[in-house]
Amino acid sequence: MTMDKRQLDITLRWLDGRLSESERRGFEDALNQSGTLRAEVEALHVMRQDMRQAMEAEAQAAGNPYLADRVLARLQPGARPALADDLALWLGQVFRPVALAGVLIAVLLAGYNVRLSQSFATESSTAEAVLALPPVSAASVYDLDVYAAQTVYAAQTAVTP
Image (tube, rainbow, N blue to C red):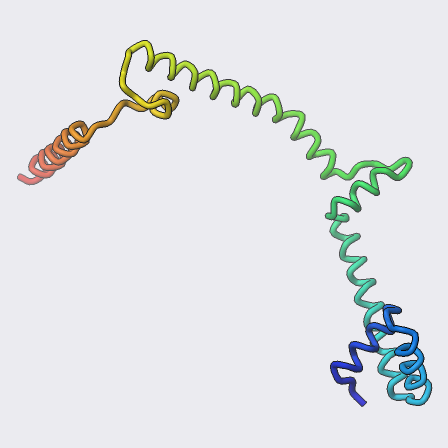
C-alpha cells in the first residue's frame, strides 16, 4: 500500500502531534488494523529522524553559521569564541580607525573644494564644487569635441606616409 497525498498529510501531522483528538483516534485505529500502514509509518518516521540527524550534523560541521547558535554558544560558561569570531573582531578593531580616517579626509576634501570654488567665484553647482569638477557648458563640450577630432586626424595623417 502506498500513501496518497491525503494519507501522507495525515501521517506527517500525526508524527508532529498536530491531529485533532478524533483524527488521532481514527488514524491510530487504522494503524492498529493495518500492518502495511504501520510499516510505512515506521519507515517514514525513520527517514525523518535520519534527515534531522543529517541536518544537525551538517550544521555542526559548518560551525553553526546561524547567529542565534553563535550567540548561545558564546553565552555558555567557559565557552571560547570561534576563530572566525576572533578574526571578525580583530578586523573590526583594525579597520575601524582606517575607515573613520577615510571618511574624515573625504569630508575635509569636499569642504576644501566648496571653499575653493567660492573663493574663485565660479558659477558652479554645489555638486560640482564638492567633486571639484570644472564648470561645463555646451560651447566647451563643442570645443573639446573639435579639438579631439583634430588630434585624431593629425595622428592618422602622421602615421601614413
